[in-house]
Image 1 (cartoon, rainbow, N blue to C red):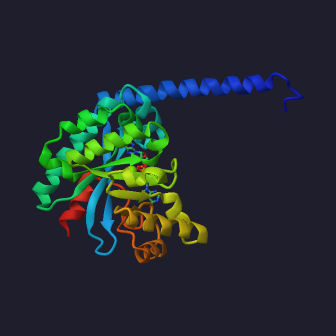
Image 2: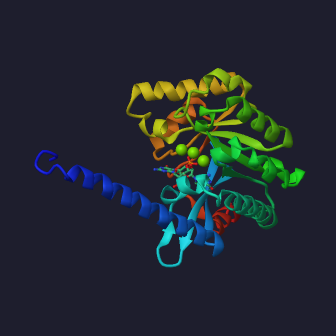
Image 3: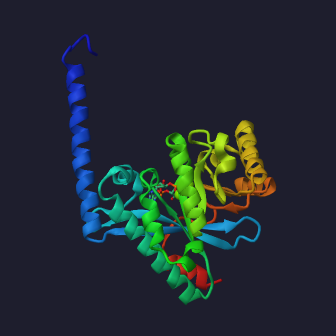
Length: 274
Ligand code: C2E
Ligand code: MG
Ligand code: MG
Ligand code: MG
């Protein structure tokens, strides 16, 4: 390829850079418009108690509801958003919506659930998550579960553990997301004031076919028990996976086998029909 046309290799790079620039500009405008025009919406995916299959929490998953392009999923914009100057506005919207939905759940169903929200690594590293959390009234804090990906432990571990301690003292529920995929946090897992480990979908999806993956899931569950944490298995798609997770003692389950992420109104109907 390069031999036949020595210039082509340069053209290849040029095109790539141009595409990156266009993508960046497009994503920038998409996110900016979404925030300005209130196109940010959240879908909710229930987390269930493994044995009773009662819903214990709803994970808020962001989408952009675009007037012409339809529903846009986070894989198209979340990496950009988490590194952009729009992050503070976005996370403020996330907290406002979570609180208003929590109120609607207790008003309209009479029961109480948690809402699990995903918080970006950057808000943990710079500590801005604490300011957001301080604005939440004390009585509401235990109904908000904060998910942070295990990748947060790649850097500034002491600072991150400090932030986790602060949030724990403030009364929030804490979950490590994508557990098993990030920088091994084994060295300080006993120092983390965390309530839940979420076993990453990549393990769950392979555990029925691959003995080694099964062994990893089993060890994560034992590890969690050993340090006094509970486990949530995410991305459960089949009965076989559910049965295995149940017999291994996973505390909570989440995945398409039980429910896809749904608009809040649909979730509310589900809750009311019980
Ligand atoms: P996550 O927090 O690990 O969320 C799980 C993702 O897996 C969700 O995709 C969910 O729809 C999908 N999922 C759940 N069950 C199944 C299943 O059984 N099978 C399969 N194939 N997929 C399943 P989604 O909504 O596209 O979110 C992707 C990621 O985007 C999330 O991963 C999270 O890292 C990020 N994200 C979503 N909402 C927010 C947010 O509000 N803030 C931040 N910072 N990140 C967010
Ligand atoms: Mg999550
Ligand atoms: Mg997850
Ligand atoms: Mg995940």
